[in-house]
Image 1: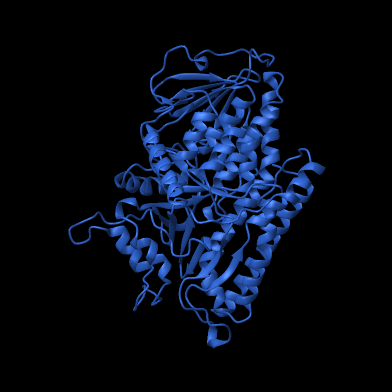
Image 2 (image 1 turned 90 degrees about the vertical axis):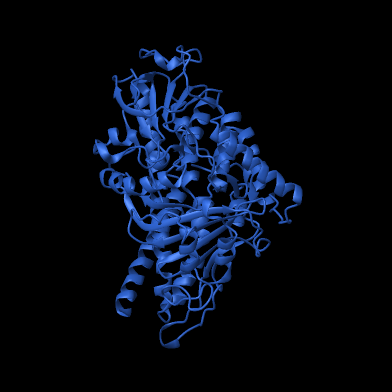
Amino acid sequence: FHLLLLVYCGIMLSFYKAIALTALLVTASNAFAPVARPTIGSLQMASTMEPPVRTPETKDRVQEVRERFKQAAADAQAAKGCIAADKGNEWWRTPEEERNVTPDRPLRVLIAGGGVAGLVTAAACHAKGMKVAIFEQASQYAPYGGPIQIQSNALRALERINQEVADEIRAAGTITADRVSGLKIGYKKGVFLGLGKQYEKGDWLVRFDTLQPALQAGLSPTVVVDRPVIQQILLNHAIPEGTVRIKSRIADYEELGPGKGVKATLEDGTVAYGDVLVGADGIWSSVRRKMHSLNEGADGFAASGAAGGALNDAEARRMAKDSVLMAQGANRRYSGFTCYAALTEHRASNIEEVSYQILLGKDKYFVSTDGGGERQQWFALIREDAGGVDPEPSADNPTPKLTRLLYEFNNEEPGDANGDVWDDFAHELLRSTSEEDIKRRDLYDGAPLITKGWTRGHVAICGDAAHPMMPNLGQGGCQATEDGYRLAEELATVKHTKDIEGALKTYFAKRIPRTTAIQIMAQLGSDLLVDFDKMMTIPLVGPFFLFMTQFSMPFILRFLYTPEF
């Protein structure tokens, strides 16, 4: 058993180092984004940028963050800023001939999907003078969705797209780079035959500094912002009112020929014409299904709330079953993890010292991050088969999800099913959370689409449709933001509609090396997290692996936090 683990660790370490080296080579050559290199002025700014200093949140700030989230959630539920009924004179109802692109006759961009990827792409295209229309299948935006990380690279992309949006997001966000982040052991853990360190539950294994790599690149520190707040900022400050049409799923499309654009057909039979169609419609993308000639079952209504949010437990149960079938047709990979998540209004006991931590265990781990406003966002990832659902609440067990989690991360003897007694912090957050606030979903990702590509003719995909990834690097939405920026930059070079296909190919060529490296690192990192327990039982190998992880993180963060993409 231990010999097999040694072989496994060696393979994983070699692969890990190879990926890190690949990422660094890509960064050095700037192959993914041949844009202007930093100027002397920007380098001086990087060297003089002041690091943020953590100060406890005031009562007014706590109330501000919480109230803004509640208002944004209410606006999302009411589909504020979106339209459900047409006037009949929308520009996308009329086809356009091939032509020179001018300010009077700009490019016309249709976008499938109104999540972060779709909204950012629309904002970037609109900022370049293009006409944009978003077709979102959902009837409303999911009124929840905990804080998501807008990391330093994504903030730079937003600054280049729309400075007002970037400023609003920074003002709404909570900086997390001003405290420690890292990995902890979740329970008391020794090594084989006692030949090594005895780890106590809650001991730090690896600590990350996410601030210095950002400052060295001249970037703003990472912030966390509630998803509904991000959506409302983009709707209010980045695109014209009425750009998002809800209850509008693009079911099919037809290319009309070089320079002649695309004809998209909605599920209700409505027809829309544009010069470009962008599939920002998530991991179960209808646009990707058509582009890559996938099975009919490869797409579908993943959820009724935009950005992939189920609106209730009944829908979440259906999603768990439907996703198994869709993954088979879409060539998506089940990660092996189901994920419970919640946002709890609770001032964590370690809030002033720790912004992000992962408690590691056997076949599971518990992630927590500061959500701002004295709230904690937590995720419990448990290894099990896809499609599982929790029992419905009953008189005997009114809180089935919470009951399971309290047992999985039990902090009292006799511990969990493995006999492990967990660190108190997981229970602290679980006990502060109501059953109704806990959401569950299985996690899927996919292999990089290096050979299949992201474009065909006048059609492209971005975000999760192009590169779904595990969440442990926090780069899913950030890479979608970079996609939107780069796509608009390339489309802005088009002088004639016949140039669109070439511009989209350039977009793909500039993005695929970077997103491929990040997809692989995210997948590998997630797989390694759940096997940390096994590696640490082996004398010498465990400490060496921890050292290599600590040593490599600054290089990985420098790759992620680049100002050029």
